Length: 456
Image (cartoon, rainbow, N blue to C red; front, top):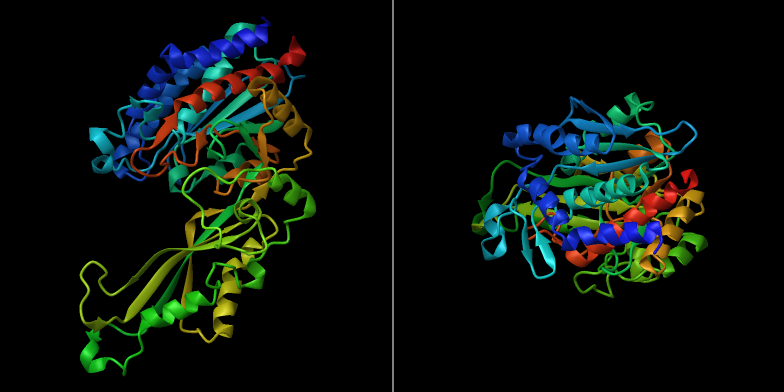
């Protein structure tokens, strides 16, 4: 058995031996809810007391940096030789609110619990479990080889779940510290539980609120019905002009120009995402389900309100609002998304609908070149370990701060997720599949070994 085979076997064995469970349990127990102002200390503890000692054992120099816009950053660097390439890793240690009362079977979000083939706990899928897999795999290579065979830098942030405030500013101010040849990181879901995925970017996201504000207060629907215009009716008709009845986007500026024949060919090889049953008659009729989520834009109404939804009264409300979102791919003019919407509404007679963009949570659309040599190296390594061809997607359907690495740091970006669509990310009962963890530990150990093989 080759050294590589032994390494991969030992990495996978961390699941059966309990090493992975014990390490993940420690991370999950740290209540790093970035939306909870009472957990500020936990952010520092996670970086200083949990990750820094691990990095130092692996031969990394560590520094924690304040973030005036959010929670701190950790930068860990292992330098082996100036002639070797540098791989930048990334992860986020913050999680969303635990939603403690909504977990099944008496489970706690901050106590790692195994039930059959699943490990339950907040952060198991997003993102503690994912960056832990990569760290354990990298540590296994160092122990087996005595070196990585490449230089490595890690950036861990603690504000991703609040939109990564300060990340772009920090990276722009620390380009020398974060200088690398490629980003290889893990976040988001796979498309299939048994096949590794490589994706090269992410859809962008922009949230905005549509508001129809006609008057102060509500008025009796019997005395004033038929005399006062209803803001909820106006808003519903305005929303109906944005898409047709099956969700096909009606605003020309919101339809991207990037679904080229080569991207279509790449997407054609991808499966339909694992998760809830899809609605085949929803979305652009000329596109496949895969093209709709990986190659096209989608509009969603996230929330609507008029009157008192939980306790309706017989009154015509004075105000109605809807929080909406556009997920968009490259080939969309992001700066014109909201202006185009305003022009569209005015053209359709809805000048009384106000559009307010929400700055927090905005992400740019990104996509690395599938022909980049780093992509080929990663694909070949994953196939060698997994014994099957990984899925290769031009971008994730969701959004990540990938623009910071591509645009600000100028790196090709390669993402290898270790979760799946049914993981309950951002919901109660978040979990990681044990089978995915096993395979992920193996393919990441094999990948780090292969990237350093030139130094053997």
